Length: 115
Length: 110
Image (cartoon, rainbow over all chains, first blue to last red; front, side, top):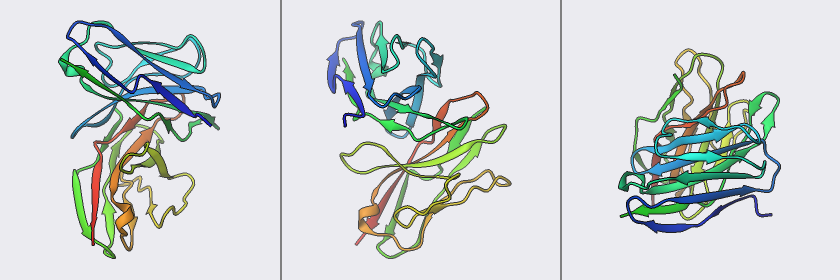
């Protein structure tokens, strides 16, 4: 079972370049999330989606855009990368469970370096 | 506002000693609380959630609404418990933000 798959796993960008991180899940989950993980700051929510065609801002949305055109995919875009966006990015998905969000299933992470 | 606070960045204990990882939260409503663990070179995974009231790998956590805490405990630490532990909160009633604390690295010494 693939679960949650993130591509690419590693990427180096120059300041000002753009890129898209792809998250794909094969569990038919409604909710999907993008986080960034930085030393001493834990996991911070960038954007999330509660269903196909919907997105919402998390704690640190500035500099990022997202799209959820298909239920199984959640894309995270950086239009003009900055060194402050150097981080490890995690995607996660979750089923709905009786009105509560359920367990989060994580991808392996994508390490992005912006020079 | 939703907030999860884990006051300890690093906790070192000896094998066989009790462990308590602290977690406090702020949420106006009835949240759902979780503990996630990240072992070296592995994906983040759920350890336990308050509504299931289970004990996983010897760990337990009780939700204390009065103190807004959800501390993780284990009576006897094992070396394989060494990992990064994150407390997380999910809103209910239509708010589905899933917020994490800053994490506590647990080191169990032989």
